[in-house]
Amino acid sequence: MGTTARDNFHLSDPSHGLSLPQHQVVWAALPSDIVMEIFSLLEQRDFLTCMAVCRDWYDFIPYCAKDVWAAVRFGVHDIRMENKRQIRCLGEHVKTVVLDTLAEDLYNLMNKLFEWGCTKIKTLELRSCVCDDQDEFLAAVSKLASRLTHMTMADQVSDVAFRQLLHSCPELTHFTFLGSKEGSWENFVEPEVRMELPATKQHTNIKYLCIDAAIDAQMCLKPILECCPNLYCFIGASWDDEPLIFSFGVYIDVALDPDIIFELCPKITHLQNTFSYNSTVNKLEYFDTSDQDGLRYFGQCEDTGEEATVQILTEHQSTLEHLCLRKFDPTERYYDWSPVFKSLQLPHLRVLDLGPAVTFSEDSLVTLLNHCPLIEELSWQECSFGQFDRSMIQSLRTLPLLRTFRCASFKLSPDVSLMTLFGRLPALEDFSVSFSQIPLTLPMTNQHANHLKRLHLKNIRILYDGNDLEDAMAKFFHFLAAHALELQELHFSYLMEPRVGSKWLNAIASIPTLKVCDIEINNTLPIQVEQDSMKQFLRLLKDTAIEQLKLYHLRNLSYEILDALGDLPLLTQFHNIVQLPI
Image 1 (cartoon, rainbow, N blue to C red):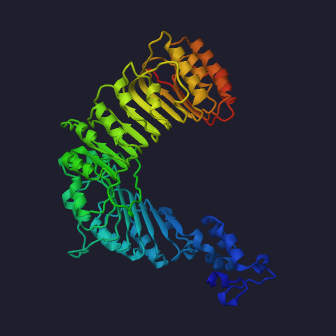
Image 2 (cartoon, one colour):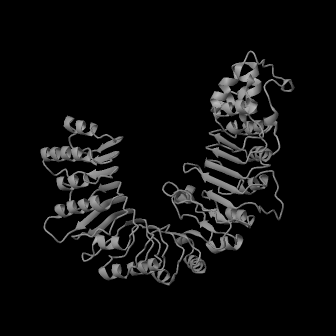
Image 3 (cartoon, helix red, strand yellow):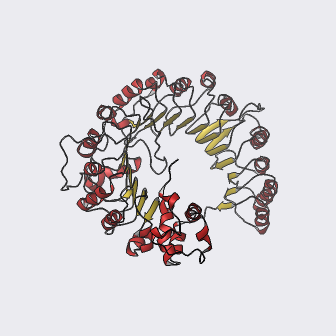
């Protein structure tokens, strides 16, 4: 194995210009690699403090800086209070640079990074920076771009000359632009700059492109994609940008039909098209499928071309792993996806996400799920169908891998029990429903809900054909305590029927694995009854793993209740949400 400069370096070696007499400094006798290892364990601010000790340390410590200073961040304070010790720690070993909230100082700092020897940066991130002068910005980027492969511009309020920026970074493979949702998007056309582009310029290295901003599809977005023939992933404008397309009374088209995107970028495996997600709710997901053929992730808003969407689904149904459908304008005519759902075969689909106003029948959804044997996550919102009856649930095949079930406006007919549905989902971990109707029947069998970890019920009506619904719910939670041995979270809010009473609370407190609990209290009870039931509930919670407790509408937080809360050994968070009279 060969030696490196680090191996050959020694404090007592005069060739380094260091006057560090061994009899004056104990650690001078240590091998240089051990000394360097000690300094490499320091934080950056500790590095700078140590460099202020003496001239010898000032000269020596930067030799240990390569790993610690591989990633740096600069803000307004850093550039205005230039630190000579910090500058000595910079150089070609800096691989990641974050520039935060810079405006007029941005170009100056980028130029200085080049002067300080940071010429091999691989990742550059700009957060809330202003770069209105695109010519200066492009010139500064060009100096730092010789090794740059990843670039992110987050919370960006300035328009950007995208094509010229990509041209300035010839090695770039991943580019992310997240426009500020509070920005003033007066100009939807890329700003004019002095840099001229070659007529046939191709950005062949670009594999990942995210432009979450309301830019004109034909004038801006299409020319960018035309230059990225090897693109594997494209993420367009999020749902948050919807108001921006009507700014200043001007309507712009910010979405390209998916077939056009495939024509321009035939290697696409991940397409999260315009308005197919909400950036405040859905994180930008990207799975590296560059070594695979066929579309794997498809997020599409049906308003940007139903026929093209259906064609793509049909052509790529054998490779799809993640499907997300949205509808941008619910006032426009509805497209009925039922025939499409009944015809699709999705053998590799893992995630199905159907957004508000996406229209389909309940039997078409059952048919689709029967053709998705590997599905792991299912969610839909505000769907227009009626309810699942017994025959539909019986026709639903067991989904052995489904772990997450989230839906709104979900109704089971009175002749179908919630536990019957659970029986079709043996791996279920997260069950979350809202604005729904759920029947409950007893007794229950222990093969259901064995892996359930999270149960969330909001704005639901629970149906029961017996006389005592609260007693039935208590039995339900005692069942979960005995058989759902992994249950950690319970969330109940705005239940239409029944109200949470003392039997419920005591049964919930019998779940030993419970860590998180949100409950809306029945505030129609006499206040003393409410207090007594709450004190009993908290005493029972001592035998659980409860860490977070949120109560709604507890009218009196008495000393006894506070004392009982203090006795919960693992509790770290407590909230009591009280609705004040208007």
